[in-house]
Image (cartoon, rainbow, N blue to C red; front, top):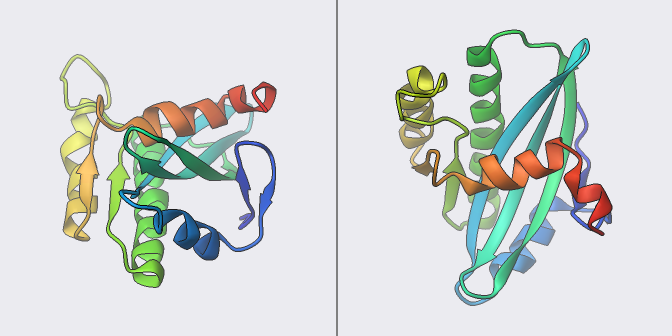
Length: 157
């Protein structure tokens, strides 16, 4: 499992905690964490993102890509995404001392397959003491991490 983090520009981040701590010191900054995945061939790619948002002023994103054995079921992928986001949120909150909002890539709307797992996934984060956002409000997972896992950021820099 890779522990290397990058900015959307492609620049490497030497020390994640130090980089996030510097960003969160900005007035009004809020720390968000999310994850998304995509299955490609015989493996599943997971992207975990940290987004430091300054409402009305934009934000900064760092991300990590992990390649793991192919996960076939939606439940397996969603629970692993949640585990990655919650583990990172736990680490950042402990080391930086700031609250973290965890974004879970599941939709409670019963029209979507992920709705069967939304309550359990949210409970994982709430049980650890985090504010949790589900779709459609889970933008760190459903927009930012999705953007990276699909490789859309590579042409933007």
